[in-house]
Length: 114
Image (cartoon, rainbow, N blue to C red):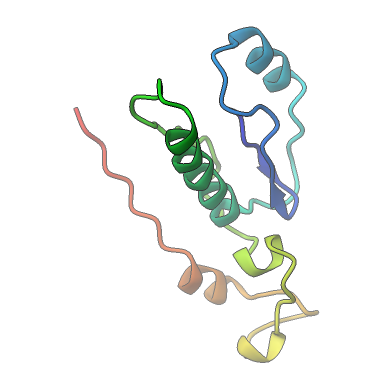
């Protein structure tokens, strides 16, 4: 499965598959740049993994590998086509959320197992 997230949205460009060739080809042509809708990417990855486990009997464990610059600068409500409400962020400028708003909205903890 390949789920790039850039601009304001994440999307499944390769559904869960065993085809390394398909995944490799899509990865080579994957667009990048713009914002990082990290929350939408992680949400979509989790939902895709859970749905695959329900539908396919031969799926063992779902592992999500996230490659990102770590700058979650697009709030989930923008990615899911909800309107960002500047009044909910007193430091909002030009209709976009402030850094403080984004930091308060997204908290991600990574646990590394060895």
